Length: 239
Image (cartoon, rainbow, N blue to C red):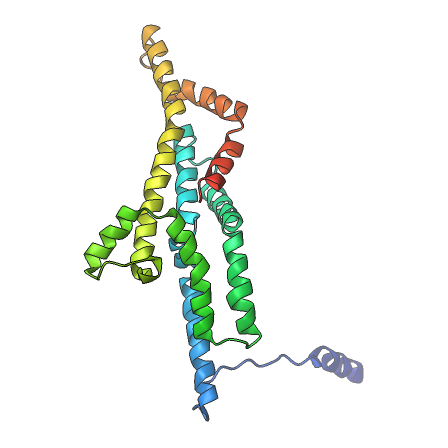
């Protein structure tokens, strides 16, 4: 009996659990230093990825327009934030797909195949992203940050520093998103005004107009296929 129990214990203890350890050793050659620096840069990029997604892509405009749509409907937390953010992310990936494909073909794949250095890969990756931002940004916003940075007036797009282009792109996106949001609000505002006037004329001042106007706004939104129109207008608003 004891032999059987011992054999059972050994059978369960047979699979060894791997030991994982992290250590820092002194670099023995310049190649070790280069690899360490590349890993450090990669970790920095990954930590800043959410901020980069917001700052240099179409995400800002999309999430603001979707938020305005929900507020115009007056449905409070419907759709929930997780759904809006998920929809905004997928619309961002859709609108940025040609840019991401170009970055992958021109910069990422050659770097992974060790055909180019990291510096060249970063320069190549920045070209399509900068082109996308230049197509959306307004000239007056670039002029604002050029004046604030007190640099010499750029002669062409290549002379515009990235630290000037990114904030100019952001405020241009905010302006465009608020303009689209204003147009979205107009039909729902008209419904609210009509419902309020009808309730006041009927003497129902104690009844909140929101309770009556909400079903009509939802009905209008469904009849015109609102989410289809919103997605279409967002996708076609990017140049």
